[in-house]
Structures are given as structure tokens and as C-alpha cells.
Length: 237
Ligand code: UDP
Image (cartoon, rainbow, N blue to C red; front, side, top):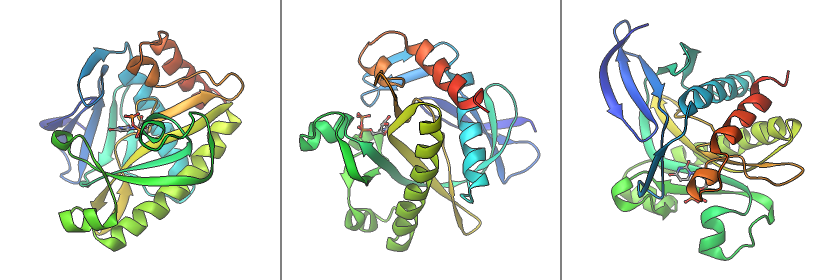
């Protein structure tokens, strides 16, 4: 598979059409990192390679557990071959432990284990700072139907169950994470990536942060944390 026209360049990835098949695209993972809706910018050495490897492994795991994703195959260090998706403009966040905006918005104490996972919807719109929204907002905005939102919530909960178990076995707490979905031939597939850019991981024993919070809050050791997550995800079996 070869890249043809670039469809899109985002904060962490570029997406290309393929020469061979209009149903397939190539996601190229970059080392660029942004936080706080682009207000903080930088690079994390080899992040693209690490996030591609982690994402491919996790999508393969999800597929093995009956959850359809856009992954076709890992093409190279930085390139993932994917099914073309009509991206649903809803970011689905799942939370197991209070952190980040849940702490800021609702006053939870950071680290509080939630009795039941919380699923939240955000409008995927950088110009509006990705506002939190409920089902009525999403329907009124025309970004998804009620039926689709119910599927996203169910799918997010199923993904959380698979991933939480997987990470616990690797001595990582899956604190929270963000998912994106898209439509493909009448089906809803999981898209985007699952990586330390889009998840919070805390070491099971020390609670050390091992994700993009190290970059967001200048905690140091960013590259080491990403490669340690990669090691636990890929070198475990
Ligand atoms: N997240 C993400 N992209 C976003 C917003 C959030 O990947 O645009 C992830 C984030 O890394 C964390 C989870 O979703 O794992 C919940 O993020 P939160 O709402 O706490 O917001 P943040 O603290 O990132 O502003």
C-alpha cells in the first residue's frame, strides 16, 4: 500500500489516501505533541513509533474480543493501514478514576476510584474547545443520532472492560481515556488511536503518571514513560 494525497493533518497524525483502494487510508503517527487545546506545543522523541505500536496492539486485542476497529494492519514503524471512516464528531471519554477535567469540573479528589465508570461525550470541535455535551446537544447539533450515541456508550464500556483487565495484568491502572468512532459501510467502527496521548495510565504500585500528563505538566521523563508503557503492552506475552 502506498500513500497518495494527504487528506488531513492533525495534531499528532497525518492521514493519507492510498493509491490502491479508496476504502483504505494510512494514518502516520508524528512526534508532535500538543496540550490544552494547542496552547502548549512540543515534540516527544519517537512518540509516533511508540503510539503506532501500542495502538496497533490494542486494536488487535479489541478485534480479538469482538470489537470492530478501523485497523487493517501495521504497515511500518509510523504507518497504520486503516479503513476509511466518516468520523463521528463526538469524543467519548471513559473514566475509572478521577483525574483531569473531572477533578476540575466537579471537585472529585484526584485518585478517587469511581464506583461505576463514567462515560462522557464531548463535541469534537477545536474552535469551541471540545465542550462537554449530553445526548440532546449531540442530536440537536446533528453530529449523531440517539441510536448511534447508545452504540458509542455500549461500545466504550465494552472497550473499557477489555482494556482495564489488559492493563491491570501489566501493572498499570487505566485511569481514563478518549475514543473516537466513525461510520464505515453502515457500521460503526472504533477509529483514531489508543495510546499514552489519549489515556491516563498510573503505575499500579506507585501511582506514577505514565502518560501525556508528564508533558502537560512538565513532570520530566516523558519519553521514558511512553517507552515503558510500550514495553509493558508489547513485551508482556
Ligand atoms: N483526551 C484526549 N483528547 C482530548 C481530551 C481528552 O485524548 O482532546 C483524553 C485525556 O488524555 C484523558 C481523557 O481523555 O486520558 C480525559 O481527559 P480530561 O477530560 O480529563 O481532559 P484533559 O485533562 O485532557 O484536559
